Length: 99
Image (cartoon, rainbow, N blue to C red; front, side, top):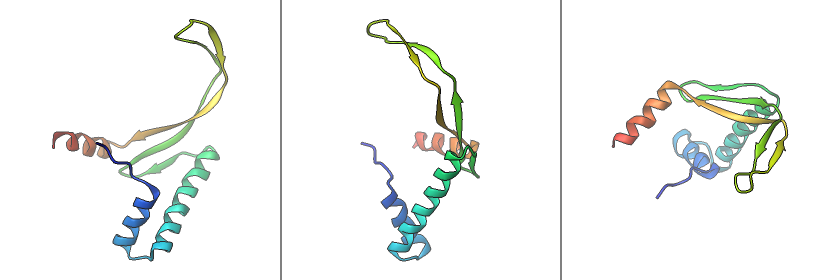
């Protein structure tokens, strides 16, 4: 069974490890997430050393197909969020699989 890491988990970790109050920890986590979101919305790339890179990519309009019916339908142009993990993160995850 897998667990999901939440904002509350992150703020609790900041509270335990940094020593800020619970409210200050929650505000810090919210502030960091807001800065990352705002940068991505503005088209910037967000690179977190030893973790990975978040970026927004523009996908052009294309024709897709409904797999059930085979009907073609246009898929509109859109922006998508991508994440590319660092080599260190890939190695850490791979090492976790061995345990």
